Amino acid sequence: MSVRNRLASSAWTSMIVLAFAGTAAADTPSPQQARPRTTAGTVADRVQPHRIPLDGKKIAQAPTVKVTCEVIEISATTGPNPSTDPKLKAMEKKLAKQPWSFNQYRLLSQDQKVLEKGKVESLKLKSGSGTAMLVETVDKSKVRLNVSEDHDGKRVINSTSTIAAGDWLIVGHPVPPNKDGHLLAMSCK
Image 1: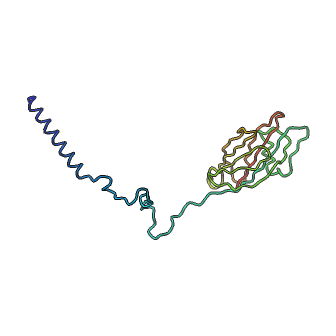
Image 2: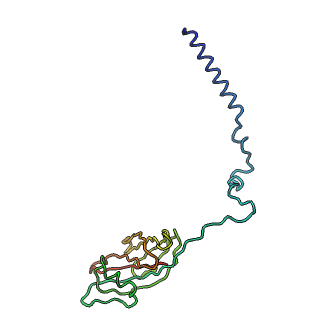
Image 3: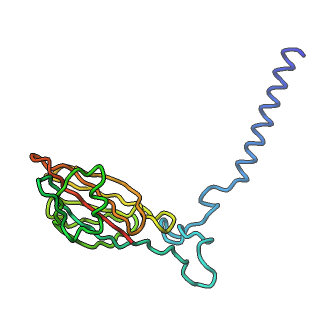
């Protein structure tokens, strides 16, 4: 094929492509023609028809997940005479195990909180400030909690743990200068 024929052939190909492109562009409606709008940003523009029930009833929503938790604040020290506050009887076995090396435990405060999934609740503490959040329920018999505590304007605890319903989660931090401990215990149902 000669150079002249190749040029003529490519010119015809270009014209055909342009002709088809022009036809396709003319047949395609503009965005304004494709979807008439009444007023920009109205609710009618955002409604998803597949989400509206035909009988006019409301769509069922998942129930809010809530748990009731008992929150106990504990002062822990080491001394010559071991003692545990009688109100801490329910968690005495956990306090005797590692990592806790104290032998005197005293109740500072006790409170009940209803935790809603994903919502941070503040805790009433005598020493410092704290928050708790229900992250999720696991297998309907366990809860995953996020517990944090600030002491003297500094974050000293930020823990996420999974515990069985009714069991105790105990977190703590040292309190200088005597190496005493400040513990926070939670049990949820």
